Structure formats: structure tokens, C-alpha cells
Image (cartoon, rainbow, N blue to C red; front, side, top):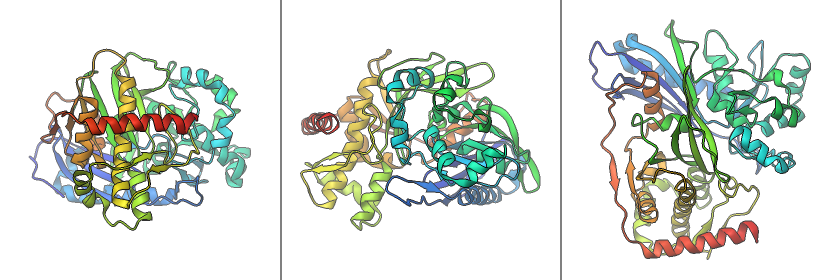
Length: 481
């Protein structure tokens, strides 16, 4: 799609590489969307605990999306002054340092193949949390990278020959997309490997030793704002100056917000964050995440994670032969007042439970429409559980900003407002990551355009609160019983 633009405004190009698609977009210097193009990507699931992508598929999707969106921009393409890349933070890959040849698939954050390996480090949870802000989990990079080293001959051979690079998927993408073929990472993506010290802002010697990990294969760490290299756009170089994670970029979709706002993004997984500014806060049950690092500042957030969100909806819809669940769910959410409870362990449990390998359950069993509503409510329940933990930190939360695919469900947003007793402000824009990335690319302008939001005020909902209370008891029994 394309919109009319003035002939003198600077433009920027955003690349959002997500779990279901690669999205390229062009924005003007006030945050107005000029053009966008989406190319689908498909995850492969070769085993119950494995989720991966062919590296070439992802790279081709980016090239196709960028080419199409630049063409849609027309003559305005000449005014695109900078580009940025946002990716899923815990995806990893291995590649040949010299040729760039991918030596492994891209292993998704959802991939659980390293569960047993990382389990051996549970006794080091406090140390790992203190250094990285995270907890030992198979969803973070180090276990996946170790699996590649142990099980893929091409990766092992490259290590022995001194030509192996391994690290965040974003680093592989940069190596292929930029003329300079760098081996670089940013703090946001590096921090999701469990090998990065968020205090010292560098790879952690302590954790490299703990995990017996070869430091020489890791990319060099840069800031999120840096001169990473140049994309080739119709034969002309375009500097790529921002590299970050999707959830971190999405925080800036509406510009700079204060720390009394909780930010929820619901895509493949769901994430809830509150900015803590340049203060690095600690919570024993939540993640401390780097949000953005420039040359003179590092911003942090407290974060909760929900592993089963859009991926759970898609999976069960396919199992039950429900076509286009997004068009059916609004009616079901409105018409089904008493759904069953869903023990949502899909893709493992995020914060605060941090458990993998537990089976999911519907209690009681029910028909597919009722179960689909139960899945949506379980996402709301998990978000509210994390919201309760975030609320322990001052200042008091005043509102929730929500975005991402499932946020377009009014019934989900209203339940979140009712259960949290907070106003929910929905950014009625599917491009929250891209818009936040554009805000950073354009040096955080004072004037920033955002779509008219949807507002959901909290209402009394005693039946919903009663289901939430029963669900919490059920989850505790399931995890610890």
C-alpha cells in the first residue's frame, strides 16, 4: 500500500522480521506510514520440541519485502535516509565466517531442544539472573548454540577450522544483507543468549566459562544505534543505523512513554513490559531487559513473558480445522460467557513459572469454540499474573498500552481492562514494531503521528475474576503439585 507524501520529507525504512512474516515499511519524519509490504515465512517443526526456519527462506523474505516496499514508495525512495532491523530476540543461527554459508537452521525462540542441557544449570539461576536479567531457559540462545555445536557436523568442523560464527539470528541477517558483511550484534539481541552481561554491556567471561562456550565464535557487540553497514537499495547504499529486538522497538511505537504505563504486545508469544528508564531494576520473578542503548544512555525495562499466545491459537485452530480463527473469535468471545479453564503451557511457561515440558489441559473438556475462548482468557490471565508483579514496583501503573495481532480482539482487551482495573489503550496499528523502530531511526522526533487509539475502560466482571482465581489455583497445582 502507499500514501501521498510531500516531496521534501525524509523517509526511513524499517525491517521487522517476525515469526509469521517479514514486514518492510517506509515512514516519514512524523511517523506517517508511506508504504509497507509483507512476506510470509513458515516455521518447520521436525520434532515436538523443535521450531526452526531455513535461513535462506528468511533472507529471501527480507529481500523480497524490501524490494517491494521501495518500489511502492516510488520517487520517494530517493529520500529514504536510513534503515533499521528488528527481529525476534532469542532466535539463533550458525554460519561460516568467510563464505556466509548458513551452517544451521535458524532456531526459533520457541525451540525447546536444549531443555535437558540447560536444566543442569538450575542451581546457577541466581548468578545467571544477576548477570543477564534472565533465568536459565531452553528458549534463550546458549542452549540452542550448544546443541548446534554438539549435533551438527558442519558447525563442529567450522569451529575446528576457526571459521565459525554463531549468535543471534539478527547477526546472520546483517552479515548477508549488508555490503560490508559484518559480524555484529546489539545489546538487546545479545542479551537473549544468556551470555551477555547487562551490567558491563559486554559478553560475560563468567558465563562463557560456566557454559564452556567458545567466545571466539560470537559477534562483536555494538550499541543499538550504530553504523552497522549499508543495504543495497536499487544499486545505491542505504545506511542501516538501528538494530534491535521486536519487543524493544514496539515500546516506542507511540514515542517516549513514562514508567507508569505497562506495554503489552501479543504476537506469536506475548510480552508485558514497563520502562524503568536508565535504572536497572531487579525482581526475583521477572526479567530485566535492555530496551535500547545509544552512545550515551542505556534504557531498561522489567518484563514478563507468555510463551503460548498467537502460536497456541494457530496450533489449536489447525487441530480443530477452524479456518480463519481471527474472524470467529470476536463472536465467540462475546457469546460464550463461561468457558473452561486452559492450563496454558504451550511452548512452555514463561514468567513467573519458568517451566518447560508440562502438558496443557482444558478443564473441563469442551467444544472447540469454548476451548478457543479459554485459550484467549489464559493469555489474559498470564498477562495479569505478570502485571501483579510489575505493579509491586513504583510508581503506580496508570494504564496499559497494547498492540500486536491478537490485540485486535475487543474481547481480549476488555477482559484485560476488567481484570487489571486499568484502562487499556490499543494502538489500532499492526505495525507497532515498525513504528517504534522508525521513531528510533528518526532520532526520536518531538512530533510523532500515531493512529487514533481504541480505549477500553475497566468494568465490574465478577465471573471473570472468579475464573481467574480458580485458574491461578489450578496453575499452582499443575506446576508444583
